View 1 (spheres, rainbow, N blue to C red):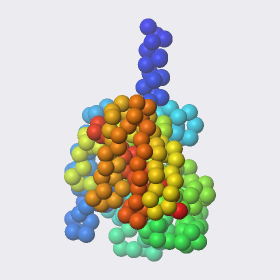
View 2: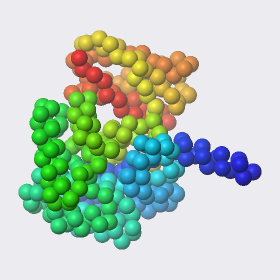
View 3: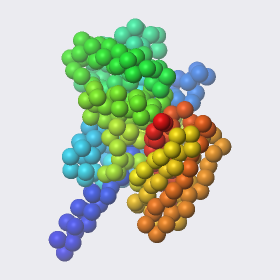
View 4: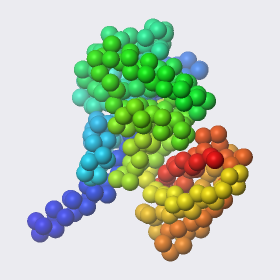
Length: 314
């Protein structure tokens, strides 16, 4: 019996899913922030819902370490991340997390903090927050990285590193794509800086097959249902080959889904159903003239499983 219970625990750990939530502003009623802010009441309700579901709050580093080493995620874990370093987080969200001893990761929009932009924290406030949570990078200038040249992205990141080292005495281990915009070139350029993980806002959940340089997060705001977010599952899609230029043939395979069909989203209005063979394999063609500018394919199964994959543009 003891061996059987140990085996169950091992399997639960090996195939566990984790969820990363992404927050921005707190208690900000201005219209321009209505899609990204969360009230303190809603934030507390979401935290309590996550707890009531039996989840455990862990630092982002805990999830990343598991993915990069043993591949064994602790079951039922959630990590909270906060983008931009808005002053409202320092005033509202931070005290809630600090007093509840809930770990978190703050991703800093460096230019806004360094330039003392009105809605953002100061370096002194970032240093205080760093005593209770992890601090990471959300770029220097917070631009759409897919519109920057490689040299511009390198310059942006180097400048951000210099500010981190000057103000915090450390190099950030994690990076979050501004606006969630990225492609293969930006991803590979940032990987060369030695980040342990890079975060998206693609939605979905994390498992042992997740790419640490494209970690899905659930965008969270006032009307986010924590229960719905926690129901999201990873869909393990492997792109096995891609060929062609304007009309690209994509061949792939789904590993953790027993159904016969999945959906694929390539651009606004372009949603198609992919037929899976008995081994989960599929083949489809993508018109690269119509695909979204960031060359992302979003795969979805009917049981709330998602995964986003990048494809190359020749």
